[in-house]
Length: 141
Image 1 (cartoon, rainbow, N blue to C red):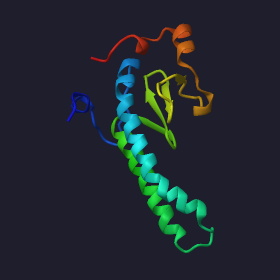
Image 2: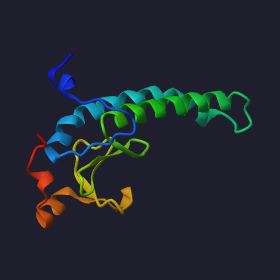
Image 3: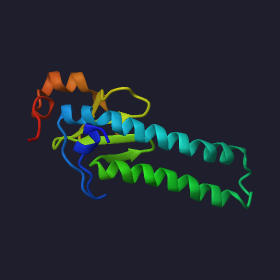
Image 4: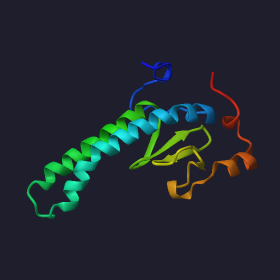
């Protein structure tokens, strides 16, 4: 087991945690790996559903398996303290708002206030320059 995985705090599904920008960036490779694996696991079910007629009696079973993969992905990330916004969309709570990430983004580059929707994200660089928030500079110790 890598040192990073040993340091990751795994909690209950209902325990979001507050992240600094550096903590979120450290966790992102793990989040990306979990998401890539789930996306790969989901692909066969997406393919089957795309090719099935709506009235196909097997459709319900395939949809159920699709849902299991998505739910497992979401549960894993919630246990790491993240907030799930949508399929492959996650938020890192800063205590003031959310650092936002959407697969396949390679870095955390967006931020949104608690009251804003995921599609109202702003450039992280712009937010840091404008607000100079503590979460951008300090670590929770």
